[in-house]
Image 1 (cartoon, rainbow, N blue to C red):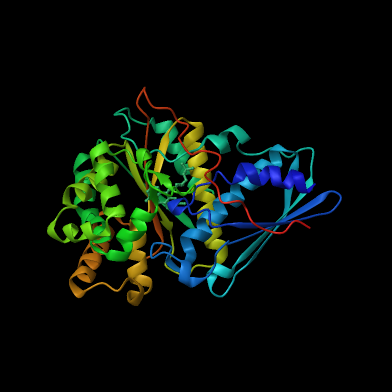
Image 2 (cartoon, rainbow, N blue to C red; image 1 turned 90 degrees about the horizontal axis):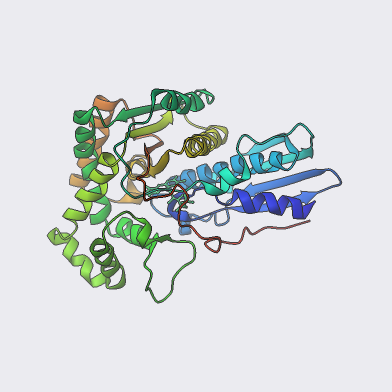
Length: 370
Ligand SMILES: Cc1cc2nc3c(=O)[nH]c(=O)nc-3n(C[C@H](O)[C@H](O)[C@H](O)COP(=O)(O)O)c2cc1C
């Protein structure tokens, strides 16, 4: 039974996580025909949290995505979910989700194991081909299954909207590069092929969809922190410009997922958010549509939820306020609350929907087996 649960976890751990942190822990308790899997964060301490992992909400969302895949993988093995217990921690990072499974001959997963294993983040430019209305409706209807959430999408055919979005988001991207800790976090997420110590769970530099020269530039900033002084002199401007404009332009659709209501959110709401995001992504993958999340709004969330943590000067704070207001006024998206952006599109003929993450790029899922 425990081996069974491990085999589901081995499939589910291909779920996405911010910065590929895979900040999850699983404990398995098995009896004759029941399995209880207790999911929590591997490293819940506030000290280890990145600025982008605001109050551990993005980590909890990723954990819920793992949970979503786990339920599908168990069902594919003939085990249905019979109970789900969410226990909110104080702080949120100490929350626990218990998923209980029982053998059920009718169980069948919403997505096959091959689909769960095949989903990837695609960071290269997408083709100019438009996503059909039917596909877009199918994706929107996934979000409708989660009553607390809403989705908004903008197509590349509405070019002014896209260009507007680029100019609105650019100051946030610039802030990320000018802020010492945010830049550090960005560079820490990436591993460049010839680095002395390659961490197995980083995003490979050659997956970033940027040129070799730009990769070397990032690598230089990472390897020789002294070069970061150049950022103060505008060294990063081209990269900032490219990062956000290619994200928006080289796609068919750019979208946002957020909560409908402004009420305070519970663990169950965040769990729904993460499940929905993973559900949407698996559906996109099934329809051969590539997807890349945009975590940039989390910088604004970091500022709005705890100004002291992000600790930016008054002029940067005004920039964040301006970005927030403009997005609200022109796109109806409120990044002072939890919002995840994403882009969608088809890959070009040379690219394949299966990405480059390797099976060894994992933290072992830690936890007790009893
Ligand atoms: C909350 C969250 C935010 C993310 N933000 C970004 C992002 O801003 N840019 C990006 O390229 N990928 C982003 N990702 C995707 C992760 O980097 C990716 O899932 C991880 O590196 C594992 O790779 P895979 O999705 O190809 O399996 C995000 C994922 C999550 C769950």
